[in-house]
Structure formats: structure tokens, C-alpha cells
Image 1 (spheres, rainbow, N blue to C red):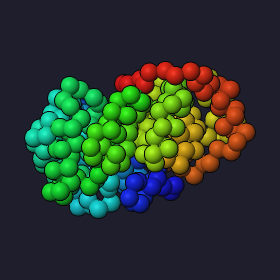
Image 2: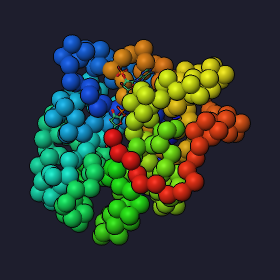
Image 3: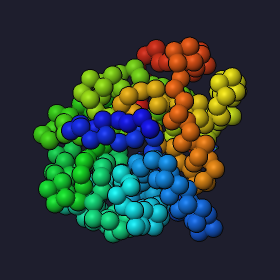
Length: 277
Ligand SMILES: NC(=O)c1ccc[n+]([C@@H]2O[C@H](COP(=O)([O-])OP(=O)(O)OC[C@H]3O[C@@H](n4cnc5c(N)ncnc54)[C@H](OP(=O)(O)O)[C@@H]3O)[C@@H](O)[C@H]2O)c1
């Protein structure tokens, strides 16, 4: 499995697992847990969740999935902006740890920018690092101007990721945000890599995938995995799709294949605001 190097040198697999809407429906719970565990078996150790997802239900389901095998997982969770004061961050993290049934979160992110000054949030993250309750911190949904402001805040440059909406249909970040992050060696987490499944019926992607003996989901994921700094976190609650998605990591798209995708999904020609789902 391809790996992404975090600042500090730790390596994490480039393909992980999302959890938004996992845990919403009791009827699918057993299969969702089985899918997450199958992902861990295949080395998809990065599990991305958030206190917001299902108001804690996704974290609780992740806690059940990693029970007895905590060390197989690299857990990512997120604090919602209204909890992101210095004290609020610590209290939110404690609640997430309880739901996840663990003593540490590997990467803890500010979910998006709210009204709390970044200095407060960073101070809370630093308190959590010092207490061993988180191992790395980062941000999500920060466009270039916000990213610069975070970076300029004392302690901010120690971040381990910016998690953003990035997929074939949302290539705007390639214009300025991705180069800025790459120049500073800040890893990217690409969320909604399948555009929440809406990409999968795109005729151009379907044709490309067929020509390359891939499924549309595998093609979309393999395209994101071309980047050395990007962790890709598709969500599925089904083991069969999990295995399908995991196989994308075995397919390296060559230059002609990437050029063919550029003709279907054009790269940006101007700055665009970062989009968010
Ligand atoms: N930081 C943020 O603000 C933010 C925002 C959005 C998402 N995220 C994170 O990123 C993760 C992924 O994004 P996402 O959940 O929005 O969207 P996504 O991963 O692009 O798409 C998930 C959807 O695709 C379906 N799917 C997955 N694999 C498939 C396959 N091989 N064939 C057909 N359908 C497939 C899933 O259904 P089934 O489950 O039924 O298979 C689900 O409906 C989230 O779960 C979350 O962890 C973060």
C-alpha cells in the first residue's frame, strides 16, 4: 500500500476509510462494522470520523469496530468549530475518546473555520498533545487565505493535514491551495473522493474505467492516489465495495491515462473558492 509521510516522518497508508453516515441506521450496523474491520485487515488503517457525524454515532460505531485492535487503526476525528475554544477542544476530545473507547486520537482536526480565534484552538490542541490524548493535529476545509492565517498563528505550522473536498469533479484546489500545501509539506486528506457516489455514473468516467479494466470507483480513487501527499478516504458500509475500493491502490495510472482524465475532467484555469460538503 502506498504511504503518505506526515511532518515528523510517520507514514500512513494513502487509502483510508470515511465514516460520515455510518452508524445512522441500526439495520446496517453489523455490516458497517464488518466493512471497517475488513478495511483494517486490508491495511486501510486511517479511519476518518468526527464528533458531528450522527451526533457521535459514527464515533461510537468506530469504537466498536476497533475494539480489541486499536493499534491497527490510525484514528482521525474532528472538533466542531463551536467547541473549538481552548477548553472546549479538550472537553470535546474527551467525549470523542469515550465514544471511540480509546485513550488517544492519532490526528485531531478543526472541522471548519468558525468564529473562535485560531490561537484558542491551537492552544487546546497543544494541551491535548501534551496530555498524550492526540498525536497530531490539523485542519479541514481551510482555503488558502484561512490556511495562511492558521500557518501564521504561533504553533499553527505544526499541523499534519488539511482535509478538503477534492475529487475529479472538484479540481479547484489544484490551482493554488494544493501547491501551497505541497511547498510546506502539509499532507492533504481528500474527502468525498467519489463525490458521494454521484461521480460513479459519469459517462466519461464510466468509459475511462471500462477501457482500463477498472470500476468507476477504482478509477476515481486511483486518480487521487497519483499524488504523493494525499490520503484518500472513501466511505462505504459494505464489505464488497470496501474490497473494490481497496483494490484501487493496486492501480497506478500512467501519464496517458491521467491525460485522458484531464480531457474529461478539466483542471482549473483560474482560482476558485474551496468548496465544501
Ligand atoms: N471534513 C469534512 O468536512 C468532510 C466532509 C465530507 C466527508 N468527509 C469525510 O470523507 C469521507 C468520504 O466522503 P463521503 O462519505 O462524503 O463521500 P464518498 O466517499 O465520496 O462517497 C460515499 C458514498 O459512495 C458509496 N460508495 C462507496 N464505495 C462505492 C463503490 N465502490 N461503488 C458504489 N458506491 C460506493 C457509499 O455508499 P455505501 O456506504 O452504501 O457503499 C456512499 O453513499 C466521509 O465519510 C467523511 O469521513 C469529511
